[in-house]
Image (tube, rainbow, N blue to C red; front, side, top):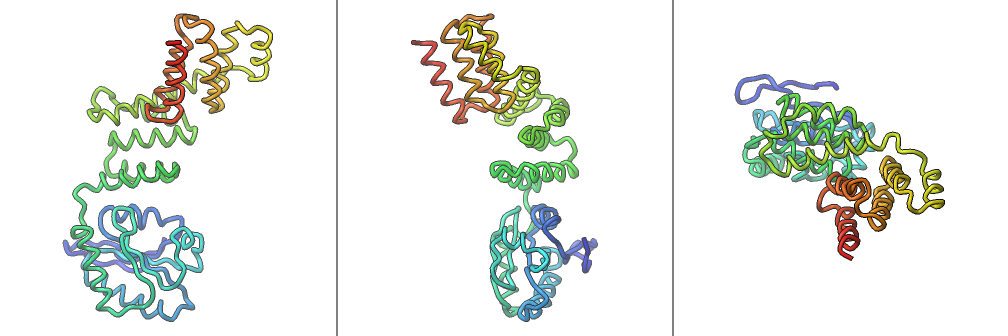
Length: 311
């Protein structure tokens, strides 16, 4: 990544305030950087006359702000995918990011006085550009990425946070959870084993860590479950072959077919609730724990289990 200029901030330390970026580095240069201070992103192109008018004015305004904001420039012609993701439809387009989120913006070349007001408003939104706790802001962004299913970006975000505070418990749990979603269970296990669960005071975070441990255990349990079609043939030949039903549940579990796994377990419970010391029900409860109490799967099959047990 080419650094175009280096400035000195209000505290007198050297800091890169103005730089180029691209799709690969946008997360670090904008999303992560905006956890510490607002970042203004200028989308421009060589052929764009208004872009050439706006850019020097933006650079001057950022220098005048003395480190309170940063400027990142994106060549739109070379980063069309990034422009598409951010719905940039005309040039120049300027977006302001704070705490990983776009909070303001404008299009077209505007006079220096309007740029000054734009930065002043941005600083009001950001409280002067310094978050009370940068890690909290980073974790909020990581949680948003997790909810959106962007697990690779979650991993990258967690690694950046851990670079600032190694061993941060909340970040390690989030990192392990993302790795589980990416089916990197061994890596997740290595991370989660670093934690002292008894020292986690946040009950939601502790429950999340326990769910991860259960998921890892279930995955290891299902590794040698057997062939689904062969197990189904065994059950068809003998409906009371409960071991085959249990192995079928594990086989479906290994492939992520949780509904089919639950149905196989319920098939045992309906016929013999006490089989092998209540093993089928205990296994179903583990699936509930791994998926979480509020997941559609858990809610559906808790109702099914209750109807079987109390019928």
